[in-house]
Length: 592
Image (tube, rainbow, N blue to C red; front, side, top):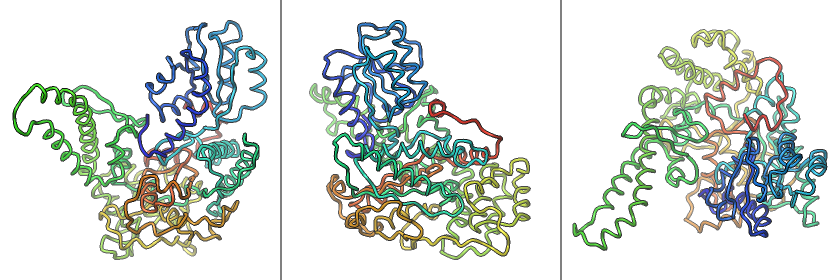
């Protein structure tokens, strides 16, 4: 099963699935088939293994949309999203000649009446159970969730979008199922934004749907607000973090190495193609992912040496009992060595582009983002910082990222200046990479007489940081202000109040050193849930863990429609100006 915190999202989701689907099925002592759609396949893969399902008498896992052989002597569990496509596939399994003896049907979320009535009409005598279990989000990590909907970015921000409201409604439904899984009824706040207003709209939707959910709770009692706070913010709140080259291991790997669906492909020493899944089952990945690449590159070779040394017998004597002990340890040694080898290779793959190009870029990027150099001297002329990057043969995407950081540092530039920059980067036919940020509410063109006020940041000057990693995501300031009860109410209005006692539950500065405490200590505190409209970055995910670690009394959970990488974000930004778009259904998005 997925590793990580005992109270991590994956474990909570698996426990909820066990308490509903698995408990119902245990009542009949026969082996069963589990049938999943693309979303529920991802959901189960994130929180359990095939061995966990086998232990619960589930013998086969099948795809709802693929041709399957009938097994009329067995019962089937259907775990699916409540869409017309899924329900039609289910009905097709029983309408003419039933494929299975009976069906246990579980929906991730509320099933509309018309779909439910259709099922009853054709399949009533085969359905043993039909339940909605309220899990329509993906638990990506212990403290990170997504709505598995990268298409939401375009639906919300494209000027041609025809389904913005519907997309926000769907996201609100998914956030409600997250809160239900956590058993939280949070107070809702949003970042006030005069230009777009999506955060306010989503906050209103979530608040209404939460009230409705807890009003209709199975227990029959109306749930009171819990010690939790939900903050909703738009991507334009911090355009810098998604564009910057990050040098912590996870963020750097996803930026510089081609990792698809969390799968890292590499060649072993014998030249054979191998692949590794980067998830919370890999404890070394969990241990290293938030560390700076300099520490990772130093630590992994040491670990390999330690394992090799521990295999040798200290006294050199070979006895039968020694050999037996070594044989028992071999699978463990092999597993440990394989883990270290994977990360040794991945760290090397990160370091190659870093040594070639990225290291030089990073200094300019950090100076533009932070507004001062490594000695704390203010950058008076950002163009002087940018110019060497434009003159060097960096890739098109690297130059675009640097130009954007320059524009963000000024809170917008003039039309004339922008045209010159676009010519420098030679993207005259692809100026949308830069101009379309306006669709997110980020100032790109500003008249010389008006430059918007830059947001004030917390003081980070006393922290020890690597010179090429001085930027701190803005969301980390928000997390720290929230747990210390310092969020400005005029900038963060309450959509609904949380209990008056909420202040991060005995909040202390998130930057103070803390004594180590028992792992379960923070579970007695409160939760801060943050949802970013338009995608989250790996550096923002890391911030949630850092603040939780520093402030033991509050667990920070962060989520979005999807997780961003710089290149994919730039491609999505460019695509915003493409012609009128179709309205995508939920299942089409999930399949995509």
